[in-house]
Image (cartoon, rainbow, N blue to C red; front, side, top):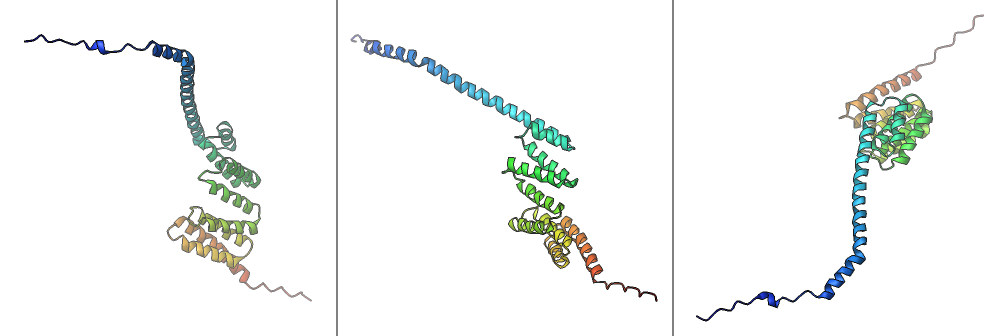
Length: 230
């Protein structure tokens, strides 16, 4: 049997070009610092964003905890001032405005509602602030304009959960203007449209009873003036 000759494949491998090694060394020398700097910047950005996210979440949690126990205007203002970009600050502003309105501080409440709209114009509860501004107008006795704005609000948002409240406000203003027939019609329409909502229906029925009372009082004949005694 003839002797098999084993060929050493290593003999076919070509040595790496010295020029290639030199070019690679030059590349590293030229761009190594830039590569390291780029990685450092990317790492710093990731760490910075992680720290920012954690810090922001911590502030949000703290603001919500403060809102949970807040009861006074000063406490609501503290949340607004300390955490102005938090979701709790938006709710604190609405709560503050609601308290001011309930206390008859209509100018302050109006200012708070406007602060909310300026700072949180894309908030889901923008309509609450807009309705609150109309309620402030009603509270100051501008019944004509408030009635018109209540009506416009309800027409623009017929399916909004605030629409019945706007219609109720419109009817109140008409009653205050002594437009008893219009107020009666407004309350009756609200009663019909609120058949499935007992809360609004009961309120409308209660206010309608007051309208009917005033209508009966105006329909009574005036008492005769006693004749002067000779």
